[in-house]
Length: 267
Ligand SMILES: [Zn+2]
Ligand SMILES: [Zn+2]
Image (cartoon, rainbow, N blue to C red; front, side, top):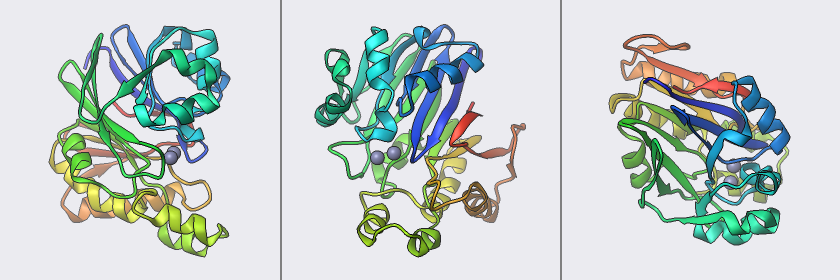
């Protein structure tokens, strides 16, 4: 695990960004907050945007690309994204156009210290993906913005040592909330977001296939609470016999909720 680190920097429907490193090779997944906020978060980890070697984008929704325009204005770095998302990305971040490189589902991208394999996720964007990232034999996964857990998502995330997994909303809070009916239907649909219950049903599989760290992510600030997300996955894991901890410990599954704004260690 020497030199291998993964952190969520921002995680919610308002903005997402994940940082990972393997030795001196540093990368981001999504840049859904301002470049300034992203830089401040990286500074608190002792690093900076100038050290980032590439950015991987899950899809073109604003909460995943908000800072991309400024990032591409100031730094020369490849931006990997699903090809079908290019149009939406350049509409929001014109300077990204000459840095974009296409991702194809299940086609690995090998960079210094990291092999990043995207998998398609069912979501209401032109295209969307999650990632399985192999850092010299130590794997972590990210699955957010998905209406349900597909077989390919389960295949990609199973066997990862650490997984950042969406626990977007509490179904009752969403149904009783003040969102318009059309938005509620979109979030609850098969190309929407993973609910606390759907996430909870999936996490025991991740623990059984080798995950020792599970980070619940992309919570809706309006239709969820960290407590509700944690409780759903905690009971599901313990019902299946997993010993769950809220911090890191030998031999247990550690369960955490990524804060909307604030660093969360994934591994
Ligand atoms: Zn999102
Ligand atoms: Zn989205």
